[in-house]
Image 1 (tube, rainbow, N blue to C red):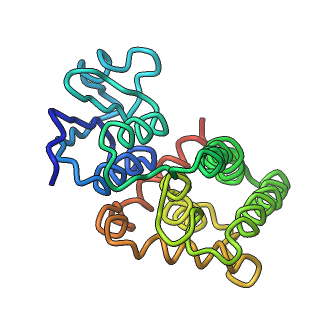
Image 2: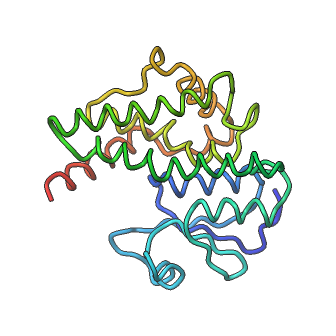
Image 3: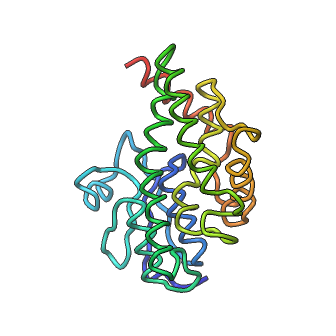
Amino acid sequence: MASGGEVKLFGMWASPAVRRVEWALKIKGIEYEYIEEDLSNKSTSLLEYNPINKQVPVLLHKGKPIVESLVMIEYIDEVWNHNPILPEDPYERTKARFWATYSEGKCRDAVGKVYFTEGEEKENAIKYLEDIVRVLDEELKGKRFFGGENIGFSDLVLGWMAFWLPVAEEVASFEVLDSEKFPWFASWTDNFLQVPVIKENLPPRDKTVEFFQNYRQQRLAA
């Protein structure tokens, strides 16, 4: 593995945002120290390095903190330019960033609306989520990954949907990932989860389901 030069990653095992940064580090072959955080009792280091939102992930490189997972992935790609994550072509780079923004805005919002609602509101949220997935399915038509034959920036950012969306479906008792309705998205999900660097760096599914069951119950009871 390549030397990271004192790279540390503050994270929490069930966080999709943390995992995407780990995937980027693994793709680059960067050595790093992983520090698990208890978000109910945050360390002084986490609060020092991310005083603004006090959340994980936080990437520390040579003593300098970087926050926000998308920013971290771009930073990793710029500092260690082997095994590029973002496309070289400027236009393709803008497309990759667009789908990343789409993920963080539309996709996360849509899943959250389904996850933390009930009744008619939940049904409407499911329809909204299906519309979001339909857009992704159309973009993936004829492609193995968002950028073509290899995983890239868009795949890493949207990769949470391949693992955590099925978890959300189980926890909140809904179904959106229909291979007949969305064949290209379903194919991308399978392809993504079979990439060794992804497959070998996912949290245990049963433990993840249990964690998010408890999290959802707490949120709905609040």
